[in-house]
Image (cartoon, rainbow, N blue to C red):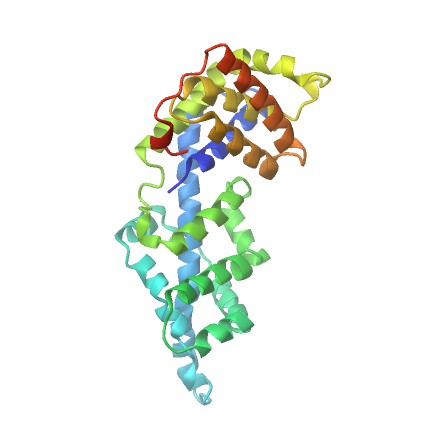
Amino acid sequence: MISRRNIRVKVMQLLYAMETMEGSKADPVRTLRQQLDASKDLFVYLIYTLTEIARYAEKDAAYRAGKNLPSAQDLNVNIKLAGNETVWKIIENESYKSAVETTKVDKIDSDDVVRKLYVELTDTAEYKQYIAVEGREKSKEREILKFIFNQIMLPSDNYISIVEENFNNWDDDAEMMVQLVANYIQKPHSFDLRDMVQEEKWKFAKQLLQTSIDKKEYVGEMIKPKLKNWDAERIALLDMIMMRMGICEFLYFETIPPKVTINEYIDIAKQYSTQQSGQFINGVLDNIHKELVADGKIQKVDFNKQKA
């Protein structure tokens, strides 16, 4: 479920932390594993909250019908959202059940914020349009969940405060979570939440991290001549880390096409570093790639059979 791009970002973040935190003696590989596990826990909590908001429609209907003097409106609460087909595909999925039980995200005290988010949702035009349509279209079932996540949950300061209190990786993982949640809503049965990082992806993660550490000085010397009028000490640290990672992929990951490597780090740089970083990294990596090819130092295999 976690992509190679997600892994590149996690490795980049860990390398950055290692270079800015002096005196840390933690095992980098073990730390990376812990961080990936923390990402899984955070993801499960976000999905759990999403399903709880949808299912709150039934709780709201039961509460209002149980009033001493329920109004006609109280007796006719629309519970279409609680029966959302995508929600039920999620909550009946064995990997989801197992993930909730393992992570214990259902023990986090968020009932009050779930209720408030549901009430906020019911006032929106998008929700009213959703419940006004009889029947269920798969696309509409998914769209309302994406709306809840992106327009109700994420903008809520109260909810994000709970997330930050329970998951200190939120700041680092927020962008990745938005992508993963969107993918999961689209195809919940396609992902096993018990194994968000498959063995092949974990092998890639370990190798990328360890190689970037072991070859730091070697690839760093390859970068310096390409900086022209730039002082290496003044280059953004994230940019240096991404360039070192990219060169490591050129040299030591024979199944990843160089074009894929360059494009990945350009996109990551645009998202996580400075406004000019994408173009800068593109120029340096492309230059070094051409030299390595000319010197016969890059050996790639099975371009079309491998995924980035």
